[in-house]
Image (cartoon, helix red, strand yellow):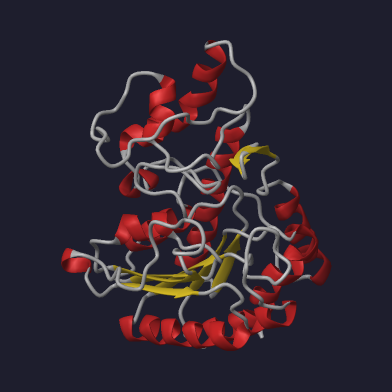
Length: 327
């Protein structure tokens, strides 16, 4: 469950999203479907705070020890004028301390799913590191809203950031992250904002109009040595392919100029015209064009699944990007 429009509602992030995609991959014979290999959290600890990674697997046991059921959700957040620098001792305080919204609830199997999603990303990243031209990490839950020490937007561990760090640690001098999800990848931006070895470019809804509201503006360009390595492309409600394509082209030019050794694509397909929580107008026929343009970069590429909530069409849209990349 998640809190939205004034009430607890069934979460849009659901298992069927991944089930439809993997079945379509099998149906068209896109490539082998591999299970994830277990990985430690050592790479995750390079982009997330250690205390945050300790917190996530502890939540459900602590929640039920308090005699509670349902979904573990925060009830209070630090904000302007409040002491956000102090970590509370209580679980309720920590749920707010380690989150920025009420869409990242935890239940009995949440940590297992979070860890498996992380393992999927690293398993796919390993394939790219070992020489594959491309791999697709079908991650669920997604990750691009998760920052160094906060969860939100259905995201807990930032799979794309972990994968990018893994590739850096394995010898890639420069890694680019291209986020094509409808919502700004605020967590990924926060993690790499002061770094020059990882370029981040995000195409998304204008945060003045839509989630995550407090990040994703065009003037956010990075800081310190990272200044100039963060590129945001906010676009208004109703954006269709002709406008969205122009932003993609500019982002790809910036990626090419960066000359990365590897590319991580945060693949969200909630830009689709029928997505229930988004307001862009891309059509199913547009998604192969995205993959084709990314392919022209000629860089080893890891696709990491993010959003997309029109479940009936998600497989054709997500896999459309991959088939377009493959030609």
